[in-house]
Amino acid sequence: MAIVESTFTLSIPSSVENLAMVRDFIRRVCEQAGFEKGDITKLTMAVDEACTNIVEHAYGHDKTKDVMVRAIYDEEQIRVELIDTGQGFDPTLVQPQSLEELVNKRKAGGLGIRLIRSLVDEVRYEVLPGNKNELHLTKKIPKTNKPQA
Amino acid sequence: MSISNIRKSAFENLTLIELEGEIDARTAPQFEQAILSEIETGKYYIVVGCEKLTYISSAGLGVFMSFIEEIRELGGDIKIFGMQPELKEIVETLGFSDIYDIVDDLSMAIQSFKELSIRKV
Image (cartoon, rainbow over all chains, first blue to last red; front, side, top):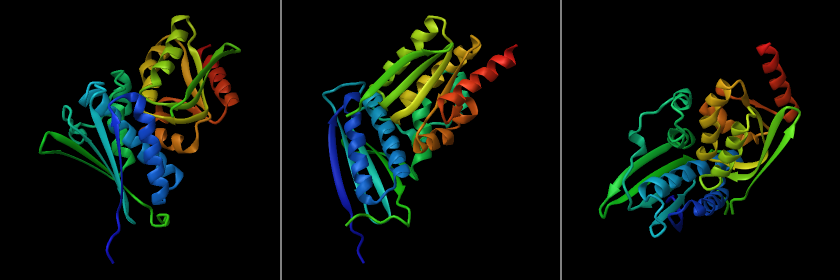
């Protein structure tokens, strides 16, 4: 039987003021996909961290730029794609640091990358034609959960 | 929308900072300022209440990380209580519980400070 995908898209101006809107969007999609509360929080947090990185670092808080968030789910997983045209940054290349190292260096910035990696099943980054950066965050739907009809 | 309400009160010789709503990159500076003003006025025993906290991102968690070394060097500490189970699970996965006392309620946080005082004697 063919896999049926549902796709949802949100585009926001690049500002931390809009992060709450992204979180609400991801929570709604997760609920529809059949995630339970704990997994909803995990994916929401991972997407929030990735979006914050784009707003603060890729675009340097330039509100005239847009961040596109696309969420796609089927019976197996939810994949969230974050697309921007700012300064590229591949989080998969960052060397992970322990929490103690981050505390000793008073470096809160490395925490977001640690969070993203620990909260989703797969992180993939690619640069597409037109200088588009795409970050894909994938989380599997537990077998016991079923997407809502 | 993200709503963050930060309330401060003095309790015995402690400062209680209660977080409400969502702490993210937009609202974390308020939390940072709340702790910073305590340090600046010489108050190093800080309890952070999370019973009404519904979300915290790395920007909020980073506030704990930014000040913990300094506060401990000054003889104080930050204790955290009342975190919702799904948030607690995430911060424990990160290793926060190895560095911070994360307890269930305010009385446990106070007790934890009393033990800290006894250890110093």
